[in-house]
Each structure stands twice: as C-alpha cells, then as structure tokens.
Picture 1 (cartoon, helix red, strand yellow):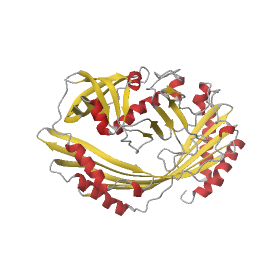
Picture 2: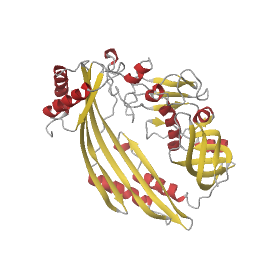
Picture 3: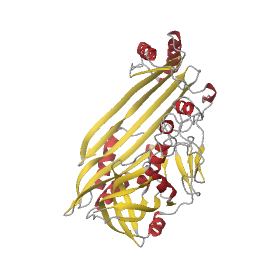
Picture 4: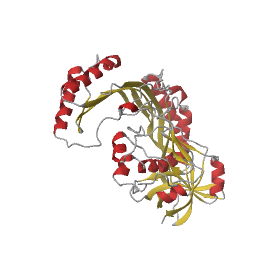
Length: 441
C-alpha cells in the first residue's frame, strides 16, 4: 500500500474499471483520495497533542443496469481494489433497479478543467507549528481574567483526489488547507465564559498572525463576562459574520436536491419565487483561484461553472447532483459533494454602520442548539451576544432564545456588512434582520 502513489493510480483506476466491466458492471466509478499532514495543539504553555495524518480512502460504485452497489476501502493495492469492486457488484445483485440511478451524463464530464491554484504546501514542520501554537495561546492567556485554556491548534493538510468512471473520464487535483485556532476561558465573580478565534487559508503564510488570533480569542472571552438576561421582546437583530454564515447555510440546506425531491423543505417548488430582498444576489463561483471551496469538477466528474443561485432576490435553481436532477426532471448543477464558494453580492456597510442602523437591539455572537425545522422553516435557537442602544454596545447577554421563520427572516434582511468572513465555503459579512422574537426570562 505504501508503494502506491498518485501516478500509479492514474493507470490503476482505469484498469480497475475495466475489471469491473469484465465482472458484469454496466458502468462504474472510483474515487480515491490521500490526505497527509499534521495537527498540533498546545495547552497551558506545553504540547497537548501532536498528530500526523496519512489517510487513504477509496470508494467504488458499480451499476448493473440501474441497480447500484457501493463499497469502500483504505487499501489501494490492485488486489484490494478488485476485492472492493467484487463486494460492490455483489451488493448490486440485491439492490432494486432505480430509473434515476447511474453515472452523470457523459457530455457533462469536465474533460478540459481549469487549474485553480489550490495546492500550496507549507514550509512549516510540526515542531515549528507547535511553537506557533504556544505563542498563540500565550497571547490569548495574557489577561488577568483568563482562567483556563482549551488550547491553540495548528493544522496543515495536503489532499490529493483522483476520480475516474467508465465514460473514460479521469480527473485529479491536489489541494491544501492550513488553519490556526485558539479557545480560552475567562472568569470573574459573575462566572466563566469561553470564546475562540481562528484563521483558515490554502496558503499557510497567509494565515492571520498567531498573536492576532490569540488576542481575538482572549478579548472575545473577556468581553462576555458579567452577562445579563433579557425580557421577551421583538427587536432588530444583527448577526456577526461567523453566525450570519449559518443563516445563509440554512438556505442552502433547504435547496439541496435531496430535500426538494423528498418534499422535506419549505422551499419546494420555489424556483422563480422571491426569497430575499431584491437588492441581493447570491453567486456560486467554483473557479476562484485558491478558494477554500473551489473545485474544477464535482464528485461525479461534472464540470463546475459559476452561476447565480439567487438573482435580485429570486431563486434561480437548486443544488443538484445527477440523481436528484433526474428525480426532479432537471439537470445536475455539479453539486455532487457540496457547494462551491458562495458570495453575497450587495452594497455592503461597515460593522459600525450596521450597529448604527440597528440602533437598539441585539448583536448575536453565538448560537446554541439545532432548533430549525427544514420542512416548515421554523427557527428557534439559543443565543448569546450583546445588547445595543443608540448604535453602541452596552453589555453582554446570555440565556436567550431567538425565534422566527426562515422564509420571513430571508425576506427581512435589512442590510449586509462588508466585514466578510473568508474562512468557509459561504463568505458573507454581518447580517441585520429587521424584526425577530427574542425570548428571555
């Protein structure tokens, strides 16, 4: 197994597909990946963990007619791949025919795909990464009210993915993901509070400085001390960027093809409907050079393309793989495996401008629990953050619940911020909502 490298797989996977065909498969696909790297954590000034990663995985899917069988393995030797194919074929014998099952259409394959500058190995060994983690945590603990630490972690992973199917398609690309994070606990007579900060990038040298990450974790924890409750009220609410991302994430969960064809989404049959304010456009761009969610093709080999998912507030389409597309009599949107680089196009305001527009209301910095009903859109989650008056933060609040309905929340977005969080597949700034119910004591 250790002697199998990526160049070997370029030959081995097509040969394995030929083997699958010889054993009775009408079509087949194989995806193999190899993740290498490390993750080190420092806590209380010393090493907490040091993990080295070298994970290889392979997934095989075969079709007998339109009966599907799948199997996986972490052994990439030729004989092991053949055993995995045999296991998948055996499963397909006992699987019902499904008219929507099968490979993505051959004409959609990404036979000429772009190079997206995703692979940037970091000249940082685990020993020096540990020094960075220690420095990050030291900055986070440099305050009298910091009473404990959950540690600082530096992670560096390089992945190589290769996909092949019996259409004759074979595609591959390498990518890197580097991160630095820190979490600490603040405490005083009022109790204890924790918070964190992080930075993620394809390029390790473009991560935020360790002292900055540590200071952000420290300051965010300390400012939450002496939190109060609120009485139940209906007020405008401002979600900071990392929380705002989750609001937009609920929209994407609601337009997943599997949720749509199962009638388990409040956005069934919503294409062409106004979902957001008419000034908002949401774009998916898989081809951003170095983007954290960039991909030249999806997990079925389908060519990815930029598109507007929402244009002037109107829903243009769903997130579909080939199976969901066939169930809905539509065409795949190359989202097998997920979405790619979501951007909200709008005229953004600074965070201070959003606070001024909020005037009196709630700034949310943390959400708790999973009280979201995807069928009805009903939304109810625990929260904490800060009370704002006259555009100025007054004091921290906790033990409150935010309630509403996602359909109304989307339409009632009053403004978006220019303080865009770039550390995820959804990149957006703060979100101001006109009116939500906040339940307290």
